[in-house]
Image 1 (tube, rainbow, N blue to C red):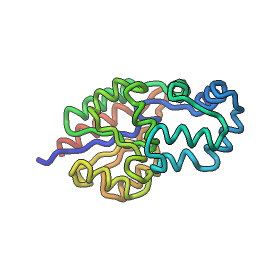
Image 2: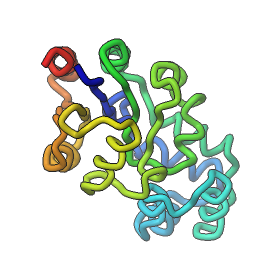
Image 3: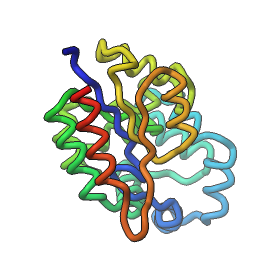
Length: 209
């Protein structure tokens, strides 16, 4: 049987993520208002452009951030603010570990190159499981839910879409993956937790099928 490929989103899938924690941290670290940072960098589309691959290196990202916002940010400060917004979801990471036993696993996350480079520090347990398979949208030149990001991810591993399983918290991203021929699972908050039990069942069933 051909190898199966599991693609996991990161934010709100493997780690809880709250931008409302990140923005105040950035404002504090740079001495700039939250409103100014949100308006100049995020609302004007610069983070989305970074996620689509406009900045090829972490240094280019940080330099663009400084030019756009007028606030110079070091890599350590970027890490501090990003970490402030993140909390691991242990049950989800356990499913990632199980998927790695059943097939090939990779990240597939809408994030800039700076995030990929920082992953060993941001999420060391996830980085260890992925064993270098840390695809982010910036490396593929497209963002979910564009069809081409899914096909490019499959091509990277030489696995056809029908043998590929995506886990993502976004319904739009799940639908985009399904339209591209992938099996897709929507990761959801359920009560005080997440639908990780159903995710585990789906991951194991996909490998068996």
